[in-house]
Length: 130
Figure 1: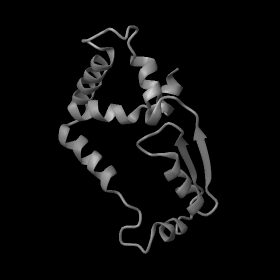
Figure 2: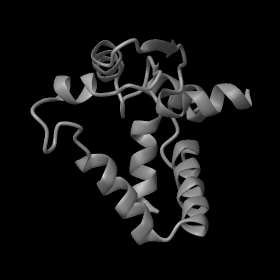
Figure 3: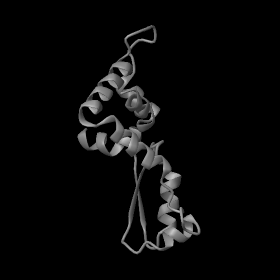
Figure 4: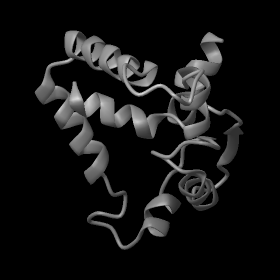
């Protein structure tokens, strides 16, 4: 649950988090809406995911490197033959637009589309729901 709470801080942009979880009064000292939201998200995840599964997924994301066992990132991307649409979210801290631009420019014929959202990595989900 703690890992999910920490992850939520990087999945959402500061502006999106403040918009949804900000406090109406700057004088508040305890029982913040953002803390309750993080607890809720952690509890929800712990009911759906085995903790080891979440750890394994996180490790896979952290350790993935397309150039592993290849000459370079550029040479690996040049090998992609599929029609490719690269999608980035402008406020995504987990997968920044700069990384999406590298993918799109390195894959032959790839197209880059950028989602303009205040909600960071989860923007595609939040925007769909709203």
